[in-house]
Image 1: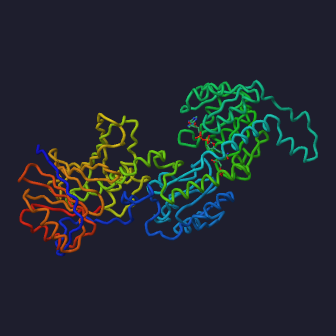
Image 2 (image 1 turned 180 degrees about the vertical axis):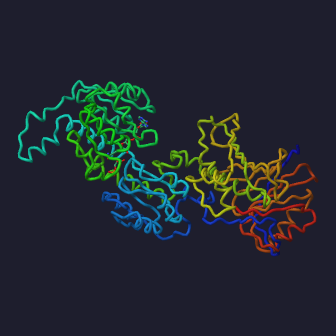
Image 3 (image 1 turned 120 degrees about the vertical axis):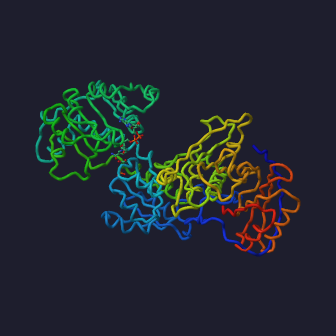
Length: 599
Ligand SMILES: NC(=O)c1ccc[n+]([C@@H]2O[C@H](COP(=O)([O-])OP(=O)(O)OC[C@H]3O[C@@H](n4cnc5c(N)ncnc54)[C@H](O)[C@@H]3O)[C@@H](O)[C@H]2O)c1
Ligand SMILES: O=C(O)[C@H](O)COP(=O)(O)O
C-alpha cells in the first residue's frame, strides 16, 4: 500500500476564467437547503425541519382546544390558526398550508394528513401523552417530527384514576343519579372498602406509579405489572412487581396505565377475565383499546367483574346505545383524565415549547420518532454532525454514474468508550449527505434510516477504539462506499471502496483522506480534487487558472505517495468554477484526473 504524505498550504485568494463539462451527471444541488451550515457561524440549528424558503413566520394549526399560555407562546413565533372540530377532509385541506399541527387525543392524524401536507408539515405536537391517534410510521416516512407533552398531565391522570377508584367502590355516580331522581336508596348503594385490598397497577410508568403512591396512602396493598419497569423504582415506593398472571389473579382492583400498542391491544379479554378473582373491580384511564369491551360486558354480566370505572373507550365518543356505558355497574367519564386547569396549562406550555423549538431547528427532548439526544451531547457533536453530512455528500459525488450505492460503511475512531458516543445523529447526517445530492428527498434525523432502507442502502457502522484522552468525541470519521466505480479513480482505497475520511480541527470539519491519499482541506465552499504527477509549480498552475476567473481558493493541500510520484491535490473554492475553468484545469499536462465536488 502506498504511504501518502501530505503538505498543507493556506492560499488566500487566486482567480481566473474558462470551462469544461462535469465528468458526472450527478445532480449536485438538493431540493432543500441543508440544516447544517459552515461551522464558523455563531449559532446554528442542529436540525432544520422547516423548508428553506420559509422566511415568513411558520403556520401552526391548533386543531383542539389548547391552554392560553401555550397559545401565547406559539403566537410569539408563528401564525396560529385555531380551528377546532375539523372533519378529516377539512384537516387534509388545511394541512397543506401548515408547518406544524397541534392535537389532543380527539384528532386522528392519519397517513392521508401527511400525504395531503405535500411535505410542508414538519412537526406534529400531541398536547398530551398518548400518540396512538398519530400514524407514526407515516410521520416518519414523511420526515415529520412528532413530539408529545409527556409529563404535564401525569398527576391529573393519576388523580382521576384514584377518583374513579373511590367513586366506583362507593357507587358515587349511581347514588348521585338516584338521589337526583328523587330516590333514597341507602341499602342499594352499600360499597366496598379500599383499605387492605390488593390493587394491581398494570403499567408502572409515570401515571401508574403516581396511582400506586396514592393507593398506598389509602392503605391498599399495591402490586404492579410492567415488563419494562425497573424493580428498584417499584420497591422504592413499596410496590412489588409481579407477572401478568399473578397480578390479575390476586387483585381486588385492577388499574390500567399502559400505552395502547399492538401488544396491549385487548389485553383484558374473555380469556384473561376468566383468570381474575371473582368480583374484581377495574379502572381504566389508559386507553379504551386495552380492554375488549364486549368481553368486559360479558364479564360484568357474569359477575366476574363486579364493577368498572372507565374514562377511555375504543371509540370516542362511544355509541349512545353502548351496552358497556349503559351497564349499571359501570361508571363512565368522557376522557377527562388530563382535564384539570393545571394540567391543561402545563400541557399547553410543554407542547408549545416543543413545537416552537422543533420549528427553530432544535431537537425536542420529547421527540417520539427521532433519537432523543441530550442537548449537551448535541452541542458537543455539532461540528462532527457537519463533518458527517459533508463526508456523505463528498462520498456520493465520487460515485460514477450508474454504479448504484448499496453498501456504505461508516467508521468512527474515538477514544471514548462505545457507550459514551451516541452515533445516531452522525449516521443520520451521513445518510442525509449521501441521499440528498442524488434525489429530491428531504432527509432529516426523523426519516434518515427509513429513507436509506427504502432506497436499498445498507449503512453499517464500525468503531475504532483509540488509546489516549477521550476529550473530543471523535478523532476521525470514515465513509466507505463498496462495490461502485468512481469518477475519480484515486478515491478508491487499496481495499477497493470509495473512501473519504475527515476530522474536526478547531471546530471546523476537514477532509483528511481521499482513497489512500492524505489531504487536508477545510470542508467549506466546494472542493476540486486533482490527481497529478508530483512536480514543482502544480499548485501555482491550478491556482492561476482559478484566479483568472476570480474563483477564491480557501485552502489547498497536496497528498502524495512519494516525491515526484502521483499526488492528490485538494483545493477548497468559495465559488463554483465555470465549465471552461474546469476544462482548463483538466488540460494542464500533469493533471491525470480531477473532479469538482459541491458541499
Ligand atoms: N385518560 C387520560 O386522560 C390520560 C391522561 C394521561 C395518560 N393517559 C394514558 O395513560 C397511559 C400511561 O401514561 P404514562 O404517562 O404513565 O405513560 P408511561 O410511558 O410513563 O408509562 C407507561 C408504562 O406502561 C408500560 N408498559 C408498556 N407495555 C406494557 C405491557 N404490555 N404491560 C404492562 N405495562 C406495559 C411501560 O413500560 C411504561 O412503564 C397511556 O396510555 C396514556 O395515553 C391517559
Ligand atoms: O394521553 C393523554 O395525554 C391523555 O389521554 C389526555 O388526552 P387529551 O389531551 O385528549 O385529554
